[in-house]
Image (cartoon, rainbow, N blue to C red; front, side, top):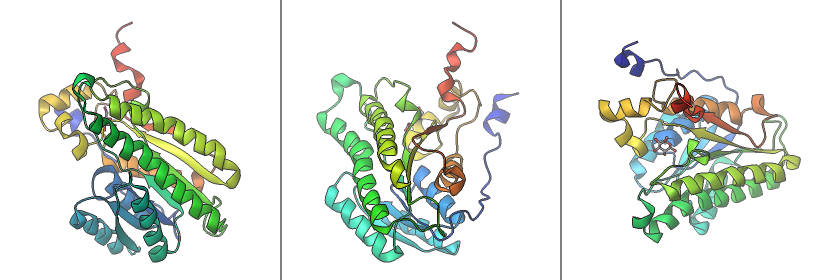
Length: 282
Ligand code: BGC
């Protein structure tokens, strides 16, 4: 098949069943990219949503407006997830406005790329602070709320669900991105340890590990045909991922259909973790 046809291949549709009716989701980093798609997907599946952002209130408001257009409640909440007081204030505001939180999507994340010899400590700290410490701080507040509220069997068979946005780089080393890869490797054990600790409380904790998804964070990897061609060499399924590929997984993981899924990392990567260089080699 010519490469053009491969690149234009089908991406998922936006049909969601109302499996999350009556639930409240808080999605961090929800004003763009994967977070935006997840917030809209959860809303389409019936959830009310707190849309977290750290800069650009207009984009966050636009997402909240789309969610209200779907007939759901939505608020925007500004917080830097690496800052304890801001995270606590965000949860207070979300719970005051929407009643509780049933689903946390720990999505906020960033990259500050450099070879290690050139990497300032500040860039290491920023990436670990947002990508890893941010997930700890948000998970802690969510768990406190899940335990306070307890089970509502008419709403969900679980007391709460946490979805950690990881990456294929929780298993694939990534030269020139040591801070990012270390943060995602950390998320793997953060998630599994919380899943083990919290399962007896009927709180489910899982990760989604996206591959290359077409968002602003990796624009340089897909904005030219040459870059996209090199990227597709890493993806056996021969198309770049779309934010809705991740949203579909988040809706399912948050729903009672996934009630027996605990402590899992679900790779949504078109096969990027299959070591495609070995297909004709080794
Ligand atoms: C990174 C992207 C990258 C992808 C696959 C993601 O976690 O944020 O920049 O394209 O992994 O390498």
